Structures are given as C-alpha cells and as structure tokens.
Length: 245
Image (tube, rainbow, N blue to C red):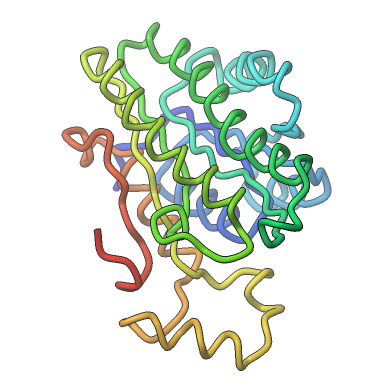
C-alpha cells in the first residue's frame, strides 16, 4: 500500500503499543509522520528507530493549545496535512456511585473534547488541500458498555457520533472521517491482567484470542489510504467478532 508515500500524517498517542504499531505500518507505507505523545523518552526511541519521522511532545489535555499544536506539527511536516490519527486517550475507572465528577469530566475532556478539537484543527488544514483523512480510535465498549467505565464508554460512543456528524459536514470537501473500534488488544495494559480474567475475556471472543496492535495498525493504514476513498462516517470494528454491528 504505497499510496501513502510522502503523505503527511499526525499520530497522537504514538508512544503506546498500538501507537508504535501504527507508526511502523505508516512508515513502511512511505508516509511522512509526526509522532506525538506525553513521554519524550519513548518518542525519542521512535525517532531512533525510524529516522525519517518527526516527534513532538504534547499532552492533549491542554485543550487551549491544541490548535497551536496542530499548526506546529503541520509546519514540521512541511506545511500541509493529509491525515490525522487520533489515538491518544485515557481511562479512569470506577463504579458509577463512586465516580467523582472530576473522574467523569477528565475522561470526557481528554477522550472526547480533545479529539473534537484535534479533528476541528485538522479539518482547517485539510480544507486548504481540498482533501484529507481523519481516523478516530474508539473502543468496542463504546458500543457494548462496560461496568466501571461509564465515563470511558460515554467518551468513546461520543467520538463515534461526533465523527458521523463531521463526516456529513465535510464529505463534499473530500475529507473522510472514520473510526476504528478495537476490541481487546495485547498491550502493556492487558499483560497486567491475571490469567483467569484474561481467559474470561477470550471466552467471549469468537476468534478465541486477543488482538495484536498490528491488527489496529492495518485498519489505520487502510483508512488513511485512497483505497478507502468511498468510506465515510463509518466505524471499522476490529475485535475478533466480539461485537458485530
């Protein structure tokens, strides 16, 4: 899939397991990448591994600085933006009756509001190009719900609805906005789960295994490419059959 050669792409949350895999796939496809995250040491490791990528430390919770970040990132990429992958997000789990307003608001602010502001700023850049691709990473639990995650599931469901609305607004401008909804993926987070709990999760997955970060990266590669040019406002489910829309 070499139609990403010389395409300028921003990836947030690039320092995590899924982010790493997304960077690797886009790099192989020939894209010019701006990798962003909060951990500079991990971004430096990406820079050493992929010499042609740019890195920029940024915390997406700084909502008042998001437009400035997208501006600086676009400059680093040479002045234009073809695609953004909004992969960054957080969890702060608790049962509803114990969940503080701060726990609720922080997850909504970072996962939903900041993703909206990132998308909004990217659209402004893409309108100048008269084309663009936006990929928002959601979650299977944004469709199914999950106990202890009312804040997280609300934020991820909100991203899906928001992306549909924005896709309608900008489809005529040749800007496609889609979501990827991962199921349970092998990451540092799932590695910490005890075997009994992990087996219980796997028992609910028809494919009978956890997904690999590469599975999400392959979906990102597809939605960033011209091969997905007639797909807009959709959610691509990557969950081994755990949830079938």
